[in-house]
Image (tube, rainbow, N blue to C red; front, top):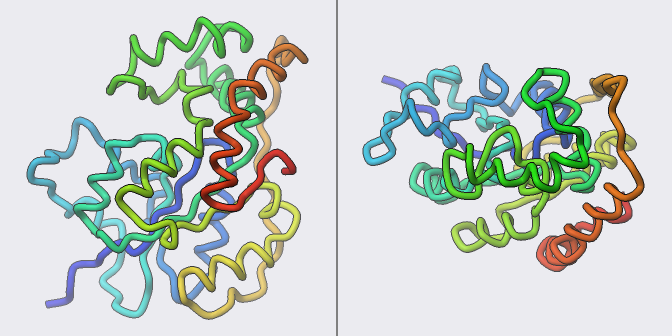
Length: 250
């Protein structure tokens, strides 16, 4: 009987930060196997998994029974959804993480545009990032956590990585910038290969990012940008201190 597959790494970060592109690149490497479903949402499942006695069968079913590959899955919310951190620790205390990040102000704008297109929100952007933040407490599955209205909350990367670092060493985390993957994918993939301990990636043509259309009535004012930049300023400094990654230059 073959051994149950064990997940070796998780691709996380923040929604709208390039995890889809990285997942696609990773699928070209012969020594890596990504989950059949991009975004399994296994570790942030609050209804389908009994976390007192979790059944990992649905997660393992995402993979073959090959023994010559390292397995990974890409669910962006894994960084923001802090209850997932302890669940991952229980599953694999040696887990490695690859986080894709972009400036949180731009991320919030992109997240809101996506929700408008999907009819998951109706508030103007300026309201959604101000008074609309109360919805995180009102609609969230956990206090301070919500899947759709967390435009601001998801952007506190430094705080989230600092929390994760109480459970896993920072050496188990590789933090990447979306702009670097877009502009120089070969260099980023070389870093990923070294981090995972696999051979260099084969030659891959650059992938074209899927950029969603901007709603006709969307307005991102200079005041909105300044407001968000101010909210995130201290946390971005914390991120740089922890990881050496500077998103203000991205």
